[in-house]
Length: 387
Image 1 (cartoon, rainbow, N blue to C red):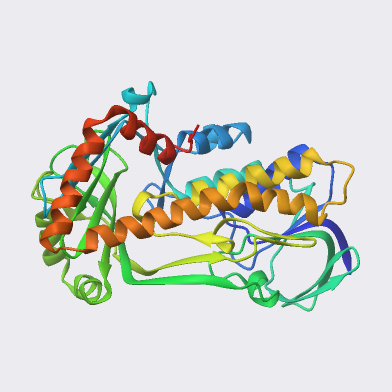
Image 2 (image 1 turned 180 degrees about the horizontal axis):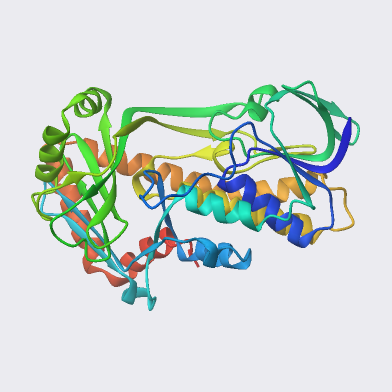
């Protein structure tokens, strides 16, 4: 049995970021337990899964000394939203907030690779195994792994995603909202430039987001009700390209697929408890939301930053002290739930196509677009700068 101060379950972007920051700030022993590959292969072609990294997350990754190690990232200076069923539109621009850009579209694998490369493996042990079981001890947890190995720790951090094994074993309840939708993702090339802008169009039966990877390439996220998603996934490539091109009114000319389409179900989950004595959940293990605004990993990085802040604020207390962990939970829950409920509300608003709702939707979008104070409020929340 090996003893650690902190064990992180999950070696994705959020788990790696938390462990890296902790190792930089705290002289403690750390292990990451992850059955998969935390160091993905990077090739010349764009990867399908991307994130819209906010200025706040860029600052966080810069503070970890990994931002410059991310080999590809595309800045965007504007976000444009338009609605099929009303005259509503929203246009956000970096100059409105005196910024150089609103954010960056970055492939998840490149963020993960940069974080992995920055970790000093003399300070952090990587253990390739699955978590099998947990036993609460007086001073922390005892872990049983799939390879029959055993570990102990003062603080256990669950960063193991929306189907968290840590959360399941500890019987932490969740609230769940199944949108009965799927997100289709793929990379596409266009005839016309994306103008360093992220684009979203709200349709009668779906939402299309275009996230630029280069001047004429983008990652798409097409959120559809299950029946439509299944039909779109089974279309021949040429038919899908035509459907996508029509969905955004030929604004960028004809699209061509650059890789295979993938899909995944859209389910919002929120843990009713982020913490227990000696245990904290971060990232999707604590909350995962509709991808409408691309905020998932940004919320996870904010969790990492806050948990490390609370741990460093109380150096004389045990790492698993429940009062310290509760401070983290209080600091993060409101922002996370506000974002989740906002996404759920927006999803409902844009699914409803009865005439009064369409009319109100269009009016509301245009009022926000024409009111600088309102527009700035929404934009700063999306940027991770609510104050």
